[in-house]
Image 1 (cartoon, one colour):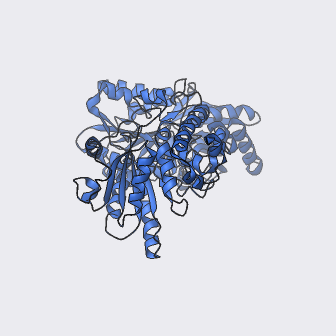
Image 2 (cartoon, rainbow, N blue to C red; image 1 turned 90 degrees about the vertical axis):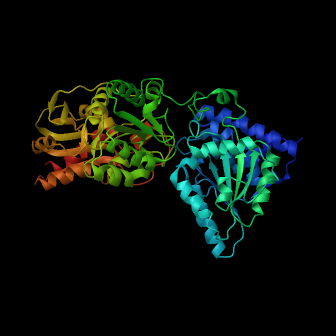
Image 3 (cartoon, rainbow, N blue to C red; image 1 turned 120 degrees about the vertical axis):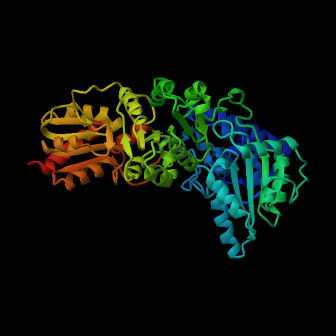
Amino acid sequence: MIDTLNVLSALDGPAELRELSHDALQELAADIRAELVEQVTRTGGHLGPNLGTVELCIALHRVFDSPDEPIIFDTGHQAYPHKMLTGRAGEFRRLRQAGGLSGYPSRAESIHDVVENSHASTALAYADGIARARSLRGDLRPVVAVIGDGAMTGGLAWEGLNNISDRVPRRLVVVLNDNGRSYAPTIGGFAAHLGDLAGRRRRLDAFARADGNIFTSLGLGYIGPVDGHDVGAVESALRRARACAIPTVVHCLTVKGKGYHPAERDTADCMHGVSSQGAPSAPAATSWTDVFSSALVGLGATNQQLVCLTAAMLRPVGLAAFADRFPDRVVDVGMAEQHAAACAAGFAYAGMHPVVAIYSTFLNRAFDQVLMDVALHQAPVTFVLDRAGITGDDGPSHHGMWDLALFAKVPGLRIAAPRDARRLREQLAEAITFNGPTLIRFPKGTIPDELPNLRYLPGVSILHGDVTGDVLIVAVGGMAAACVEAQRHLDRLQVTVVDPEWVVPVAPALLSLARKHRAVVVVEDGIRDGGVGDAITRTMHDNGLHMPMRTLGLPRRFISHGSRSDLLAEYGLTAAGIAESVMDLCHRSLK
């Protein structure tokens, strides 16, 4: 009998898979699952989605010759088995750790990773572009896109599907991984349609061009539904699709969390993500998300006009408690951030105050809707951005480091960055009474201890020092504690630390304070270019105030995965790093 665990660990590429017997493939699938459970529960990561794609990935690599026949994973958190089958099984001990494997496909890791894809619904468009380019060159090799039913709720997926079905000859196979879920159960009419197709359980040889489903109605080929945990059945379906002259959908039914009983029993999200202890990812102490969730429920009890929207992430962004209490006032739009923002504008027009709760990185996708559908109409919509700033082990696509620079450009949008639980509650309450657009952003993780005001000026809290001094440190949101700590290393200077609270627009009181200091340092956990520091500098210059200034923040580059604390330290956003930068500015500028 083949020692499949040794085969897995020795794989330099997937070609060896084609030599394995049926029994060996079953053992290989079991070993991949065992390795996933052991390693992912130790390092943390996406467990449920990958347990569901083991046989699917084996079949894909037996049928298609990656990377010459590229396999593109939509929402790449389902690609761990693909990584194992392409020579990286032995590297999972450092999954999502600094210098180790990324939690998503990564071109830097392997030629088999085509797209560094971790935002949903993009694979069909990417695959369409590759297939069209190949067609123009007379290249008949197929291109494969693997997309989950959850990602099919995103608008870009439908744009891709519409273009794939335009009858331009090309070799393209769409593998629809249908597990009935994104983070939570998939919503909407398309999910119901897939459920209907799955209920029919048509035979594999019932491939037809007009059998009453949405794909064939668009002119695509359709094969399925197929048991996605039967390697032979999936392989047979893929070979038929590979031979088709038109783009073809292979509909695979899988189970999220397959083969790991704790995940299969977890009806909330099938252990979509787990921490390093093997439990669903959540900090043990009170988190920013917990405080937001509790405050929102309290506000909802007294304000019947308050409604909430999310994009397939009800629990991760803290809306589950609100949904339990007020189920008719929560809308999950699926992985469709653009729709969430524009729909919220409609709610506002109709007299409601919508709160759109979303990860910071994902609101990037809806910038146009925030700008043109919400802000242009001065719609009273509140965006609450979780996971702002450095988020850690999910890597460059998930760091919420772009929000301040992007949304500070939006006319009329007020932006708050609370420093602690009390300010989060206060600013959320203020936001939902404001007759215009607002945005509140906070980081991932445990909420810090309260930082009391020593003195309050209109729009600005003084956390240390007085209204005059040598250096004014402007602390943005979650950076406040580190800034207060930094002044302890600056005993030779008169330092004032302030929290502007609503960081956009710039409070006039902040300019008054700046005039009474010799230098200004702004500390933020977003990119320096175009962020709060730039807004303060520009406002000061517009008001004739020119003085030594420095903004401490993140560089304009894609930052790799690693712990939040390590990455903040790397970029000088700790108390020691802030103090060192302040001393350097004073040494250079204050003689």
